[in-house]
Image (cartoon, rainbow, N blue to C red; front, side, top):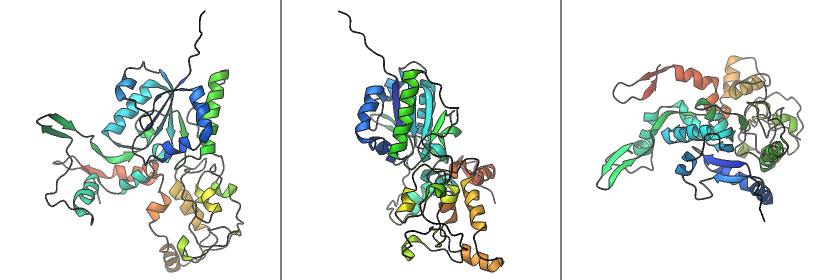
Length: 344
């Protein structure tokens, strides 16, 4: 008697510079994780199972059918894994905001590598390091050589390092969207359907967060910005109309406006809407149409109410922002340390 085994497609999941929320979000699909297990042979998921890099290195190129790669590329180890998984995977997906646009790690792109390390190991109020000990990429010990990844000057999105086939936005992606993506992939693999066009954004909508928000927009003119804890917002009215800075007009739909529905402004984690290249400038343009003044001094006063503009407008997209590209072009290299520094 001969037993016929069906070869399941191979799935890999990996995290680089991220918080791990995308990994947890995969488990948020609850019992459907059993369907994923039934449909795929999970061959690499080091955060959940005991896989080794050498296991991936031993695979044939293109042997992995699909890899969900979450996390930005912050150091040399992240880069090596991105290159390795790109080579081994037929389809590489930038999974979540960090891989898609750099997300929170990329906010450090507003400063330098040296300044970041100075803060962590010397200048932070919580740091006690009188000898100013710093991590070294290579340290010799009696037991051998210890190595650490090289800490990069800039955080990069996944597609700034390797070729990416698809993008799934969100910090993290919503569980129902994750399942929709996986279900689509399963259907494609089982029935031989064509893949979506390369570069497609999956698990998201094609409008803005405002378009799926149930709150009523009255197009009021803003005379003052307030932070969420400073007022009790009307539960039915647009938060932006009430002076709470909400990134809904500059954010792609797909999350179901979950934050906004419970009184918290959209932070922009699903990235810019279709046909918009820069989320920050999209939001600035939206605000320009609602600020209630034509006097420069009054406009400045209103805008001063926006706490941390860069961290607000580019909280999730600094690595891919036009602003970041301009900053990268204005750098010089320190002859002694090799660090890049912004020029005046």
